[in-house]
Image 1: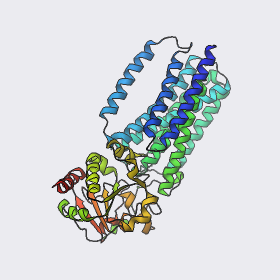
Image 2: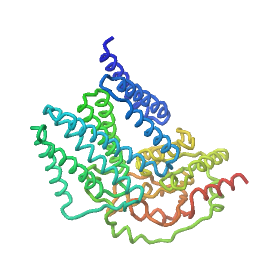
Image 3: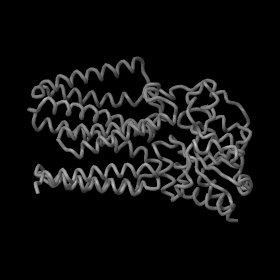
Image 4: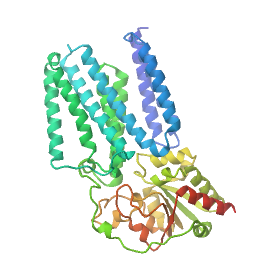
Length: 457
C-alpha cells in the first residue's frame, strides 16, 4: 500500500474519533469515554505523523515527548481544582504559541513560498500571537497575579482597531512578496503579541469563563491555520473542530449571561459598580451549623448550589458525604449548576465529578427555577453572582437580565460564605438580606464537616 494513502487513512480514522469524542463529551455520563476516544484519535495522529518520511531527526522529538509528558503528568496530579481555570488558560496560550512558531519556522526554513502559503503563515502567526498573550493575561487575572478588574484607557478601542488594521496591511505586504518581506512578518508577530494583551486587559474577572472559551476557540483556529501552513490534514481537521466547538461554547456562555460577545469584550464589565448596588441595606441573619442542622434534618427537599467558594474550600468530597446523609434521612437532594458558575466552563461539573457525585443529581437553571418555591432549603455554597436577585430585579445592576438560579424563592436559604464580600463580579448581593436567608459564616468545608457530624450523631 502507498505510504501516503496509509497516512491519510489513519488521519481519517483519527478525525472520526475526534468527532465521536466531541459528541460523547456533550453528556456528563459519556464524557469520560469521549475523552478517551479523543485521546486515542490524537495518539493515532501523532504516531502516524512521526512515521512520516519528512521526519529526519527524532532526538528533539523524543526529548520534547519526555519533557512534555513529565510536565503533563505533574500538572495533572499537582494542580488544584481551584487552579484548573488558570491551567486551561495556559494550555490555550501555549497552543497559540506553538501555531505561531510553526508558521514562523516554515517561513524561515524557506522564504520562497507561494502567496497562499504566505497568507496561511500570516493567519497562523496573527491568531497564535493573540491567543498566547491573551491567555497569559487571563491566567494572570485568574491567579490574581494582576487585578481581575478591567483596565481601561482613553481611546482603547480605536487604538486596538488601528493596531489590527496595521497588522492586516503588513500581512498583505508580506503575502504579496514574502521573499523580501521578513520585516513585515516580524511586525505582525510583535503586533499580535501586543494586541492579545490589549484585548484581554479590559475584560473583567467575572467574564473570564467566556474569555477562556473564546481563547480556546482562537487556539483551534490558529492550529487550523498552522495545518494549512504545513499541509497536514489532521491538524486542519482537529483545529477546525476545536475552533468551532469553542465558538459554540462561547455562544452558550454568553446566552447564559444574557449578554452579547461584543458586550463581554468591550464593555469593561466590573470597572465600576452601580451606585444603587452599593446602597443595599438590611439586617443579616446568622446561623450556626447546629441551628442549620435542625432545619436540614426536617427538610423534605434540599437544593445545593455550588460556586467557586466550594472549589476554594476543597469541599467537594464532604458535600457528597453530606448529601448522602440527607438522602438516608429521606431528603430529596439535587445540585443546581449554573452555566457560568466557577471560573471556567463546566467548572462545577468537573468539581463534583471528581468527588463522584452522581450525574443524575445535577440540574440546570431552567430545571430548578420552576420548582424553587417547593424547595425546603436551598444551600448556597460559595456561589454569589449566579444567585444574585439584582440580575432579575434591579435594572441598574451590571448583571441585570442575566438568568440566575432563583434561590431567594426557596422556603429557606442557607448561604455558606467566609464573609459578606461580593463575588467575582464585584456586585453586592441582596439575597443576603432576604427574610428567608441566613448566613453561615466560615470555611465551607469546616461547616459541612460540622453538619455531617451532627447527622452522624
